Image (tube, rainbow, N blue to C red; front, side):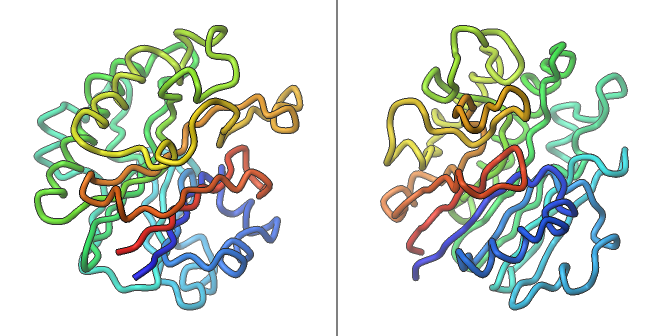
Length: 271
């Protein structure tokens, strides 16, 4: 069975709806599953026709620490076997995510996993290290290993597909100006090591199965005409369990789809 999954950081889903860019994503690209990041909304703030959109069921997670911040959602045609919000308590405790200094990222609506019949789909909005790198230790020492542990735990039961805004360019080919950005948030050694660990544990960066080299980005600054000049970063990904690698048919960046500083990413896979 062929499936299409779309991942998109909307930078505020209500803005996407207001710009009339929410519905076309479904009608034009006909996805089976859509994963949104940075929704900045609680489900109760949305009209019923958006929460229950056409043939899709939706599942939202919002920040409990701060309204209008972070948040993820998944829309799916198929009824999931189970819906899992945030990291399990045991993983959060193991990695000390309840951090009074930097805030608890496990209360910021950053992870939803759906158990489907044949696989898990995990939608993630990884914490930003911040321009002053104040949140880098939390991300590097706590969040990244917690997320990888979680995905490997799920993988014991079924193969995993995870997607979202990981807030890091993995290699020099994943941003337009790597030399100028060494050590800045989104391109520190610590953040890149988080992706190295994911790959080492057997997850496959699906975009790089098909496309090599630079010039292929998913996020652009709102300043300096960056998008028009394609001065961007690839920080939005689809990873799959190794067992699913040969089932991936295509990964596409919808760079002309506007409405956010990120573009949607499309995964086509046979399952």
